[in-house]
Length: 135
Image: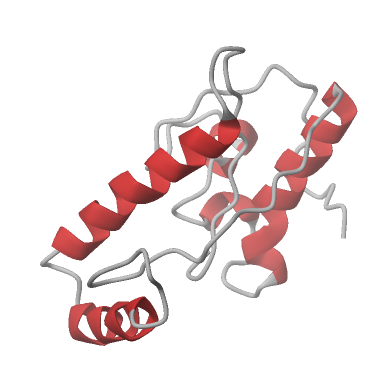
């Protein structure tokens, strides 16, 4: 989505999810700030700089909001539901008419068996496919 991100992640027993999210935000923050070819760069940098003023930890640009909202997927049914929710999020938002049309989604990997823009590790869950939105 244009203003938020959904991920399904797993942490090895010796790693903490909070550390993974922290490192992900740090890495992507730097890459976003360094991006020069973005057509909305001036607008984005102004917004990031504005939000950094309200943080004691951030010096120049704040890309990400503080915190995250983890939901534990305790079984395959819930994992499949969350994957379906993520894939249908851009459809519910009116960005695309079909999940597999959203460029930054793994839906094309699941629905069409094609490689999408992003590298993804397919989950070994029963995936019902198109038309089974959870609402």
